[in-house]
Length: 178
Image (cartoon, rainbow, N blue to C red; front, side):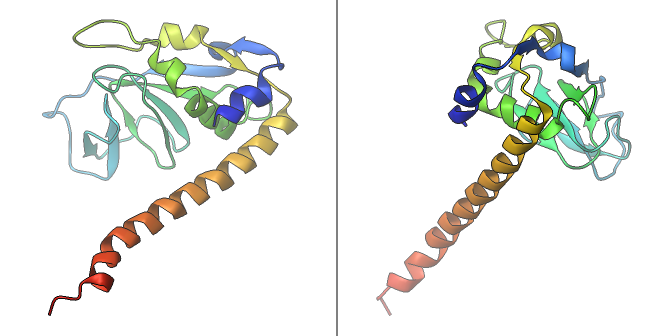
């Protein structure tokens, strides 16, 4: 994804908050959680648990707000309950493509991690994400990049699956002990 930075370095740079709504998740405790299928997105890379109510629609980008993975970027194809994270959603889908923003932020993951503040318990704050400079090319360029990035992501997933199958099946093919 370093091509992202190269591709758009000459384009207009704007604060992320100018093109996206950035909102902090809501506090929820284990006692508040009711059994359900809605991922609760907190400070990690995976859902912390599952709830029966969502507070964000499908298509939200999340940035973990605190802990070891503060700044971790994820995209959710399903409704979520945003907790210890910030959500990023395009202000105008006809000007800023949500998929472009997601893959762009993933390409800039190191810079997002660089926004961490605090020693023992690092945090990434919404106010810093608001000011984070992000490329804003034409909508046509955004869509073109999004299509390429989605395709590249599919290939990456296929390669990961191949590696898993290789590791699982290879020993059985070469095991000559009987």
